Image 1 (cartoon, rainbow, N blue to C red):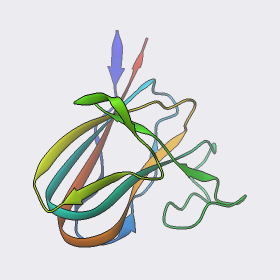
Image 2 (image 1 turned 45 degrees about the vertical axis):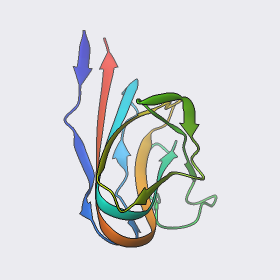
Image 3 (image 1 turned 180 degrees about the vertical axis):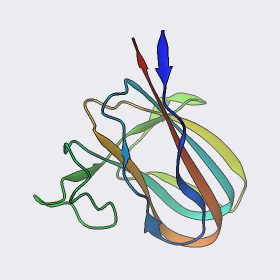
Length: 133
């Protein structure tokens, strides 16, 4: 039996550079990220942390001993042969698209997203996570 958590909206029609809040995924084995780009031009990257609490996690700040975050790899469900490296992320080119990405969580406790190089459009990012009982 699979237990599915409610979907978390971490970026809602975001239209500027910036980072999402962290989403707690420690108790989940499966994580799928839904990305809807509407005329979006910019770069979207995903980050994770293994810290027990969200205290001190700031996806908009640089990684450090006090802010132990890192970019994470995702897999596009439409092209599973070419992973999306965490340092590269997804580049929007002004078109409208929908992507479903899988995350190999490897003990991640928190997950989030960050937009950089923004110049147009919006992007919505939702995180779904589940566990097998």
